[in-house]
Image (cartoon, rainbow, N blue to C red; front, side, top):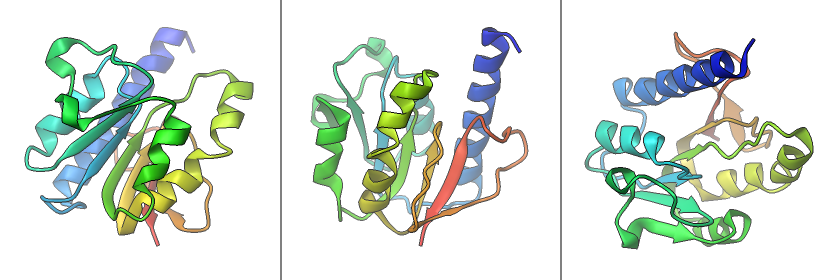
Length: 160
């Protein structure tokens, strides 16, 4: 599979999960959402459209998103995500979306030493998570992917 086809597959899978969460009303309208890895802001923009009444906090090292897809300053958490996400442990977050994989196995292995625990710690019981990396953690129950999401392109969980 070409890198372009791989990217398209990942984005289609990501969109299918996000749309499924909205269609199935899996998060409350006042629940906090964490967008872990703002990047260029495309996914943030989609989440903002799907969940207009929810507060969305976006994490990244620095703002690099298109201005139309950049959260307000009060909703932007800048710095090393491994460190900044720790402040959300026990915050009863409704939904975490994490797309910070690099496609470099050695770098992603380091991320997986802290990301699953951080997501589990932030989520409220029953909260959901979608991630581009597998989040193996005892408190995260894998959920079946909805139609249109390809296994291995995105991962979907509920906090036990």
